Image (tube, rainbow, N blue to C red; front, side, top):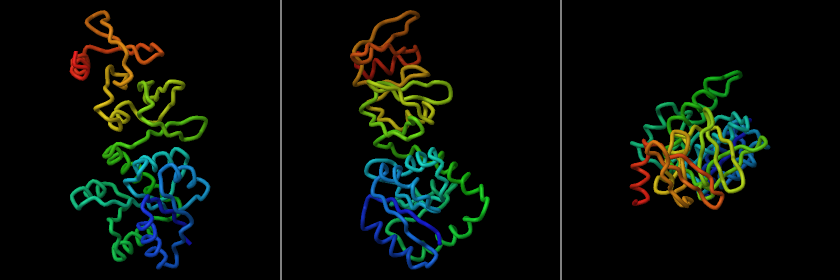
Length: 252
């Protein structure tokens, strides 16, 4: 039996998919989740072979849910479900494990099942590589409502509204809130693409700041500036490359 988990915030969609999948005697639905948070918490205990993942969940981007699960060493095959039109689907076809278009059709789902059966071979590394490439290709197409960080081996979801700033430390960046610094497996550029550009601005090659948390902008040496963030009086550098954008955003 192929153990399957469904992740979709719409119950009718989950019920339809369950009904169609269970027409195949080799498929067993072992779990359903209606949010990204629930999926991240519950899937490690189930260890499914296949995850049907809705791309657009209420609380998170489905792509980021998969990334978080990979950080927890979950290597299930993933089939993305999407309501994209035919033009947007081309992005998935570049390196897709597979996708199914909503509303689901039995004929298309049979193709997906055939692909699953073909790819669930022992020691098949190609599938894992395709998942990684797919995530890189489309992982930043939609900004998630929360960002995935790590703490003591667990994935923690951070609301962007809680951020003071983001700082790059080597290859990866960390999320800084009022009380803690949260390491991530994202680069500064990847995090920037996940943040609302109306609220966040890069001020230095190693920093992105939450504009709502700026208290002061102080002239510094060599025509640069520094920013004072929130009541913590944290100083963030502003390099000359980003001064013009900062002034435009603050209307100064």
